[in-house]
Length: 282
Image (tube, rainbow, N blue to C red; front, side, top):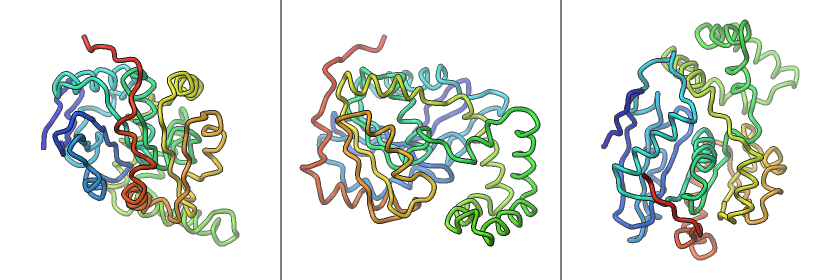
C-alpha cells in the first residue's frame, strides 16, 4: 500500500505490474481497490495497474467535509501522482462512480489519456441519488435527514414499490448502500465532498472525436442504476466508442467485464493505442 499525501487528505493506492503502459483504476461507491482483483490476471508484462481507494473509501481519507473536491484539486492530485510515479501518458479504467472520475480526469488531461474503459459510468446521465445530494438549501437538508434517519424513507420506497412506481432492484441497491449508520455517513460525506465534480460532456465528446481516443463502454442488461439506454445519447456521438452490453446487473459488471476482456484480448487490446500528443509535465 502506498499513499499520495496532499493538504486535503491522503489517497491510498497499490501498484501491480512493472510495464510502461500505466492504467489508473477507479472503483465505485462503497467499494475499495479490492473490487479490481478480478482485473489483475489481465496484466501483461507491458502493463502497470495503479488501483486506488477513493476518498472516504478503504484506506484513503479526506480532511474536511467543508473542503469540496474540485476539478482544480483533482488535477493537482493527478499531477502529483504522475510526478511521484514518473509517468506521462496513461489509460483510464473506471466503474460507476469511478467512471465519473475517469471522465473528469480525461477532461483535465485529454492529451495524456491513451484509452478509457468505462463500466456503467456515473456522470453522463445522473440518477436520483446524485441529484438529491446536490440540490441546494432545504432539499439538501432533506437528503441529510434521509441518510441519518432512513426508516421512514425506506417505508415510503416500499410503498412505491408495492404500487409499481419503483423497481425492486433499485430499492435493494439503495438499502444495500445504507444498511448501517457508518454506511449512511459515507453516502452523505462522499456525495457532498464530490459535488463539484461534474463532467463537461460536450467538451469531452469534442475532444474524444478530435483525438480519436479508444473507448470501451460496458453496461449490464439488468442494470437499473446506469442503463444502456441512458448512455446511448452520449455514446452515439463518439464514432470510435465500442459499446458492449453484458448479461449482468450493476453489482457484477466489473467481474463480467474482466471475463469479457480476458476472452477477447485481441479485439479489445487498448494498451498499444496512443494519443498522438505527448506533452511533458512541468
